[in-house]
Structures are given as C-alpha cells and as structure tokens.
Amino acid sequence: MRLGLVTYNLAKDWDLGTLLQVCETVGLEGVELRTTHRHGVEPSLSPQERDRVRQRFEKTPVQLVGLGTVCEFHSPDPERLRHNIEEAKRFIVLAHDIGARGVKVRPNDLPSQVPKEQTIRQIGRALHELGAFAQGYGVEVWLEVHGRGTSDLAVIQAIMEVAQHPQVGVCWNSNREDVVDGSVKPTFALVQKWVRHAHINDLWREDYPWRELFALLRQARYEGFTMIELPYSMSTVDDAVRLLRYYRALWRELCSPSADGQPSQPES
Image (tube, rainbow, N blue to C red; front, side, top):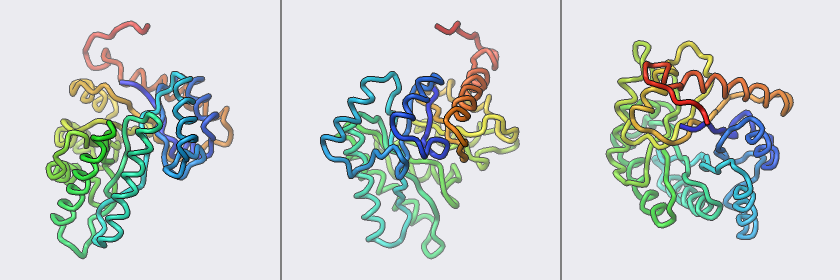
C-alpha cells in the first residue's frame, strides 16, 4: 500500500505547485485532485493546459492517482441524472488526458419518494454505462462509500452487483458506519472484491479500527493508495507539513505487517 493525499480539505487552497512540493517534502506518493479546489485541474482545461498538467506530473515522483468529482446518480429527476452521467464522462476524458488512473464518483442519498431498490438499480446502471465509457480511455470509476443511506455497505454491495463492470470499483471511505461491534471485518467483506481505492482520515480516532483495516487490505492483496482526507485546513503550509509528517509516521506504524503477527520487511 502507498500513502497519498486528497486535496479535500487540508489542501483545498494550494495551487498545483504547492501541492506537489508538500507531497515531495513529506514523502507522499500520490494525490487525488478534488474538483472546485485551487489546483484548477477541471474538465474546462484546454488540450494545451492538459498537456502541461501531464508534463508537470511526469517531472515529479508524485503520482496523479485520481480525480475526485461530486457526480452522483441517485436523483429521480431524469435530466439531473443525465447531467451527472455526462459530467462524469467529461472527468473520465480529463483523467485520460492528464494521466490519472481513476475518477471518483458517489451516491449521496436514497430519495424517500421512490423505492430504495429503484434507486439502487438506477445508480448501478449509471455506473455500468460509465464503466463501458471509461474502458475506452483506460480509466477506472470508483464509487465512494458516501451519503444518506448509501454509506451502508450492504447498499454499496447491491449497487455494485447491478453495475457489474470491470472498470468500476469501490472507494472505501473509512466511515463510522463501517464499524460493527468494534470491527470493520463484516462490512469490509461485503465489498472486498471491488475495493480499488481508499480514503482514510483521522488515524488518531479511537472509534475506528485502523490496524484491522490495514490488515484486511493486505489480506485482500490491495496494492493501491490509502489517501489522506482530513476535514480541516491548517493556517500555514508549514503547519500542514508538520501534521503530514506525523501522519505518515503514524500510518507506517499502524499498517506495518509486523503489527498483526506477520513478518515485516526492512524499508529500502
């Protein structure tokens, strides 16, 4: 596993140069660029601007892992649903053009005016359409475990069973709802085969079994990123660097194979 950073919310006010400089300084290996933030990497970029973003990442060891969208597919309004699908396609093309591996989308609600099963089918079919589109661009689509009712892992499992496309996976989001009797093992099992991306947050939270989560990811042979997504910002970049250095050290300790009885390997 590797450690990266989501620009939400710690890095939302950093331009691309600052973002990459911080990641290089701290030793973070990847970034996920959340839409609307100061980095400015959006579908509105011209072909020349897209080339410049790609070239910027080619010159740094920091990998452009993904693009974080707010595209969501639960609305019973057909026009709004179609708008979100088409917007997600624009992000998929952008991801291809600038060298990102995936695009994060989300469910955000189970509208009360329609049956739950109808919304699940609708989200799943939208994801299947996006997966087919993304396949032509060599990009993955990651469904974030998010939203009212839709952050239930059983609902995510049902959506993925409808989606059924190899380019569509799950973005584990480290929600409190994941935890059952102090463990995430039963909920992780519901979506384990689809997990392609992961968001992590406050590793010092005592109400979330981080060590168990990292062990489950290793057991699932997960080789992707765990992306830092902190809900607050720091007053200065220097303060953020200090926090992220501490975070990286804590992450390394919590996800160490030796911590759960497996032999550890010396760091190169």
